[in-house]
Structure formats: C-alpha cells, structure tokens
Image 1: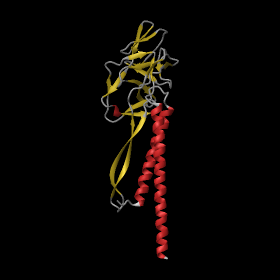
Image 2: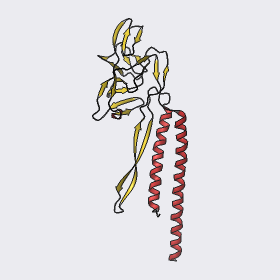
Image 3: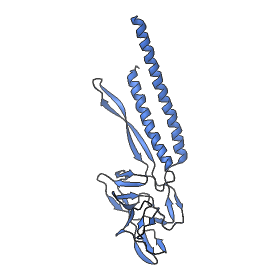
Image 4: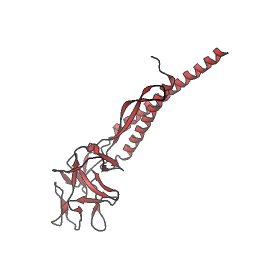
Length: 243
C-alpha cells in the first residue's frame, strides 16, 4: 500500500497536535487534584471525511473536549459550612456577576452581610434567593433546610438536569447551562453538613496517561524524521539520475 509522504506528514502532525492538547488537559487535571468539586477533562477522537483542493477527499481527525461528571470522593471536614451532595447529579446554584452558575463544590463561607457565599464571594442561592446566616448554631438537614439558632433560615437550592451535557465548564468548578437545557429540582439532594466533595481526578491514572502520551508523541516525531529522510533520499536520487 502506497502512502504519499506529504499525507504521512499531515497525519503525524495532526496526531502530535492532538497529543499536545490532551497533555495540556492532563496538566490542568493534576493542578486541580485538590480543588473541591473539580471535574476532570478528557478528549474524544473521531474521524471525518473532507475535501482538500483538487486532491480529493481525505480523512482527518476531529477532537471534542468532554468533562467527566462522575462525582468525586466525599470526605469529612468538620467545617459547619462545608456541604456535600448525596445526589450524584445534583448541583448547588450560585449567583455570579456573569449570571447563574452551578457547582458541586460546597465549600462555603459568609460575607460581611451574613450571606452564604463561595470562597470567591459569589452568592449561594436558596428557595428565596441569597441565604442569610445570622447566628452561631447552624444546622443543615438532608433536604437542604438550614436552621440557624433553632430558626429556619432558608432552603439550599439543589438542581439537576435531564442531560448533563447541557452544562459547560467555566473556570475550575463552575458550570453554565447552555443550549435548550433546563434545570430541574432535585427531589432528594442528600445534603451532608461537614463534608466536602473532592475532585474526581485520579493522580495515578493521569500520570500514567501522561507517560503514554509522551511516548506516543516521540513515536510520531520519529515517523516525521523517517519521512523526511525518505524525501531527502528521493531528492538525491533524482539529482543523480538527471546528471
């Protein structure tokens, strides 16, 4: 089977670019291994047929970024304002300057006005809007009911979605709703006070994938060098024949 050298170079270059992009993802995953609620990123590959000038159609590689929405390990922290969700598809609702966002990271605090916020200062939303926490004895039930000093202070809003692919990651652990997707109320949020969901990144798996990618990248480099050597030999032979 004869493969044009130029096509071989294109294929190897495309593969190297894909490996480089995946390597950047792995690096970002490892950097966020301790980020609460972080969901690791991956890439799916598929082939597509397209036309190139007058040379006819050829097969190219297409890449698509995907987010692994599997829940991370839940660990006990003992912090009063740390919340984890028992519902694997549930999300806290957050008000940011850019609009409503969703997160699995329940590492919260309060601002100067006593409102429940994320560490970045974004408001955590309840059934009536921002949640006001004025008091010392704070208790949160499984259904999200927040009691402060024996008085009901509000209910944490926990939502889900028919298709989690309608969520687009923004930043480290926030998601925006895109397309025609709509939020739905989670019937059994399973809020756990004093617990926090960690990232779903496996350090060992990511490091193993990094080693494999580096080897694959080096293989493509050798392929390019081999094709370049073949081109050089072909040029030299043509030169000798002409002389």
